[in-house]
Image 1 (cartoon, rainbow, N blue to C red):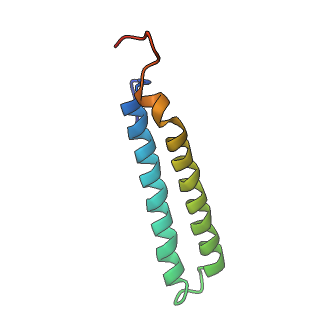
Image 2: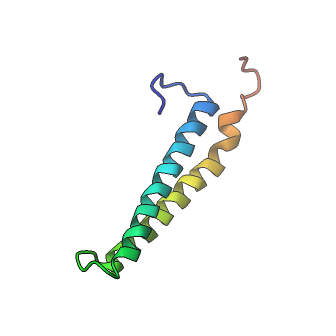
Length: 82
């Protein structure tokens, strides 16, 4: 998501937003498979539920990273110019 490897806060924010969206999309896929597990014996509802929990954990960790780094990413240290 950052082909120029730019280290400004806006590009990093875009990367974080993209990662959160990808994790959420994956979680929604597992949620869909959980519903289908009721009618399709190829799917294991418990396994799908575990994957949903894993997605929730991943998303929470990325959100924690976002909150922990937002000030650093969007403010310049004293004495640094644009």
